[in-house]
Image (cartoon, rainbow over all chains, first blue to last red; front, side, top):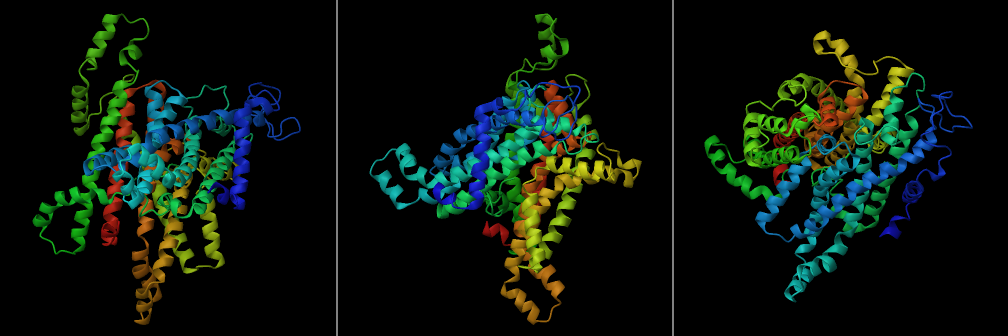
Length: 289
Length: 349
């Protein structure tokens, strides 16, 4: 599935870009040409130069270094949300394909209730209520994306729940976890992968929005969203300042979405459940953006 | 929002509706009956969802580590003072009792008062709602006009340059988040070509022109994404329905082409696009928070953000509740419109 997806040129570009981002996450500010926190009051709000490839911000800090150093926080926070959402959503989603009417109805209403909460407002609220931290906010986002996983995985599992081999396995006395792990899991795996890539992109946008608003981040620490916000105040002096962090955010989001599309296309029948994301009438989930 | 007409919920929805049909005494397939069914189905989902979200919203506040006594009295407060303050706010009562009175008061328009300023939450929200609704409403209008125009033009020119251009541009736009679009619009239309103000808000009473000039950029920033999605869905739907036999039939009967497209094909091809509008409404409400921050507008978003940074629980709860209500009501409206426009949508989904 993955190998077939990687035949597409767009997927190769996306993977290369994501690899670079991942490298920056691992190395942190190791490759940053300068100290991302070092201020140089003699050289504030400069354009590109040999010393500062992407210029300097309002305190004379090197933009490229801050961009590199900000990668880790932004990506980690997005991954936190996705992992929490996956843990809370995938197994219940598979289970609900087998559950009775009452349990199904109740779980779907609970999922609807969480999906009706606007992500950003909910994340801001939780960050505010449980101490101003990015981690708290992303746990909240993780809880909110769990129903997205739940809905998609449920839809994917539903078409296999009534299959004869599942019935046969149950009749032969296989316990429920065996049926899920051996018979259902391989069938829903493509949907899981596609959903994860899509939600990681959505999560990154939420992180960027929150850090842009100043939620959960202490000012000197660089984040992509925070850089956007601080550059916004100095547009008259440096009109193209926000372009670099904006491109970093959009590039990563676009790469994740392209990768998701390529995997969806490559996984054929099995990816159809995630296809529900594309067709709004059948769309069982609100994708996050 | 979720696709509201899932098969699982049809049984309870129909039970709710049986008496309604008798009362209304409608013909079995009249459009009004379809609308009533859609309304009933929507309510059967919206009401439990609303109940659960109020529970979530309230539980969040109740179990948070924010304490008004500590917040208001500061660190020098004696335990007795804190106890008295907690009693004053009703925080020493059991959870269900606090929740009950919060819901009861909310039903009467009382969302409590800010812990810090003592201003009633409902007043703050009513004061700021026009800002957020102006931005979100205008964004929705822009999305509908641009999206419908783009989608129809693309579908009528299928395969030609115009179609490919519109498709490519909308695909590009959907990758741009609202706040990046907002910053881009500020750079181009407020800094490089200073036509519009970089941010702020004036009420409509100061003059419609002035009010609109402050709203154009934020509304575009917020609405672009929805308009691109709408254009794509409308193009797909319309291309499909233009191929149908009834379109050919209408042409053969000599109906003017404009009528064939706008009445026959559009009505049948618009369903996915309308569903997309419904999906975008929570995003418009949530995205308005970010857009308000980019353009420094005093709306619900700013209220929520300031409250969150201070830990002002009643304000956060109130803002969250209003946001959820907006989402639920608008998705209900979309579903009813969908049912009216396309009687088969309820059966198909």
